Image (cartoon, rainbow over all chains, first blue to last red; front, side, top):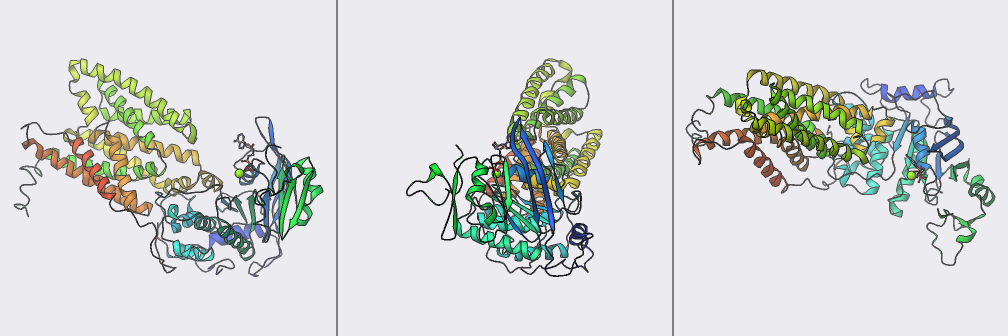
Length: 310
Length: 299
Ligand SMILES: Nc1ncnc2c1ncn2[C@@H]1O[C@H](COP(=O)(O)OP(=O)(O)O)[C@@H](O)[C@H]1O
Ligand SMILES: [Mg+2]
């Protein structure tokens, strides 16, 4: 990590980019912006959010908050509404009721407060974008006109690529990179504009276990060093356990949130699932088992989520 | 130089004002098709691009029937098709091909009727040939002016939305969450495409205009790793194919069957295809050797 605090404030061409959203978000906060580790502050408050698709309630009264510098897992089985919830936060999905409040007030389109890495993101090898071009689009892809050559922008891209450990693939076409490398590039794309909140939708789904652990520890570093609230959705929580400060567990449309120890407990998850489940801790792993799912020799890899059929 | 190249450039090539106009108009059209074509390939909207060429046929043949310059037919029908596709739902990936197909089908039906009426009406003999295969050697002053204005309109549409188009092509949800008006950007891109195709319809004809849109772009995307470089390369490929095509067509007046000349569009399309095949021999390296960080690049 070589990016620490508001970078290069003496460079007029790019200084407004990092400075403004940060200033906006911490406005009124009594924290000196130059301190290396800001006190954790509330970045997002989701309150009583309900989403219906054609009368079917996919989310029902979902409430939680996210804090800067923390990693929060959004855990739930497939189809539980994780992607829907992230799209609500991004303002891409309308809600039936409830509110989403971002620190600093309304979403500012020109100075994004949210970085986003969508689900199942595999890029076309023929896309004529190098990794560094994708990262640069994170800085100014929403702007009008063609980009003019800028040394500062190039340097900023280099810094962020270095920070995510993707500097060696900077000049490769992004679609030819491995899944783990693409995730790093997309994370760089999402954080280069210095958002307060980083949303990642199943970033580990297509990765082998080694790359998954690397990406997870990268995300933890990003949260701490950049003081970003990192929100990671996953249907399997064990890879996230070592870095997860808090968890939002979602099932049957409802969500419970808190620290891992508060939420990942038999009685809490039983109430959420509406049926008895056992939570088993085994060699530092957590298994969430429906009573009917306890079978000898059952795979430990995916039994921590109830089968959808239930 | 002149004597050396005499066998290549048949007598009078550069003296003919028709040839000079053709070279200029051809270059302008190829240049404008490049950025549009690159985005068409990136976005996987070749089918929509092709639909516009059928729509152009309808517009051109209809324009002949009512006795106006076919370029108006190309342009007006192209923009009408843009709105129709947008209304039917070209934005959603799933209904995109359906929307395109419906518009294409309707356009083909109408062009069948118009071309039939053109062919059977004695006052417009040759209309079908002009519409289908272009009229690059008989471009009059007003057509040249309209072409230039349309080319400017395409650039004035594509340049402002350039980065937003790239970001939307990367992922439309990311773009939308960054405040990019994804749908508006998509419509602007479609309108620019319909105009670019209308311009190609003048040079190489309505049915072949997709070739000038897609071919150079696809060739360039095989050779380059960056969008800006892809657009420049596509422009060069398009201009090269057009100019060579014009030269060969001019020379072909001296080929058998003597005094007839082969159509320009044939040469242009064949040359584009040849360029595309040659470019296949050079794929960009999948992975360059590790680079030292900090090498400036630029989009
Ligand atoms: N646009 C939509 N229209 C109708 N139903 C949807 C839509 N998007 C998602 N759903 C449904 O909402 C539920 C939650 O989906 P999703 O948020 O994608 O779950 P997850 O990301 O947790 O797998 C699923 O049952 C899905 O079929
Ligand atoms: Mg999902």
